[in-house]
Amino acid sequence: MVSHQPEFAEWDERARLLRTIAHPVRLMILNSLCEGPRCVVDINALIDIPQPHLSQHIAALREARLIDRYVNGSLRCYYILKPTLVGQLMRLISGEHAERERDRATVIREAQRRRGA
Image 1 (cartoon, rainbow, N blue to C red):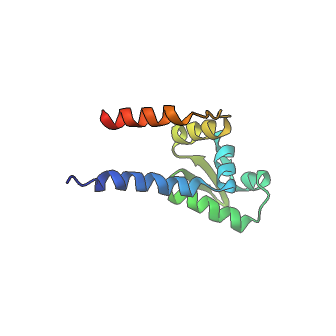
Image 2 (cartoon, helix red, strand yellow; image 1 turned 60 degrees about the horizontal axis):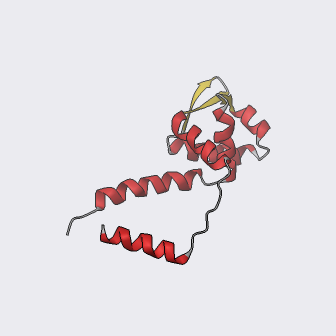
Image 3 (spheres, one colour; image 1 turned 90 degrees about the vertical axis):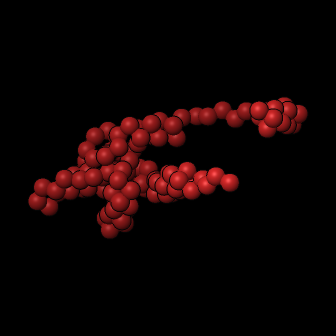
């Protein structure tokens, strides 16, 4: 039997990234940074939560290597480290996605055809 451990490890890393992103405040931070770099005080003006809470969310995004920062004295200015990934993700989750119900017979027929392939 062939081991799928390397493949599992890749999917595990992807799942960890999605868990990090999957919080409303973190999505709001990423969305605001899609417009360009911002200092933490400006992010906090857009996202009205206590500054220590904002810092925890920013730290999680930094740890996931989605954002990074430059420090200038007391200013912390953040930017997106993976703009293609974050931009595509924001467009994907911001769009509307139509549901498509399928009848039972079609689903079973297609699944059986794939199974035989």
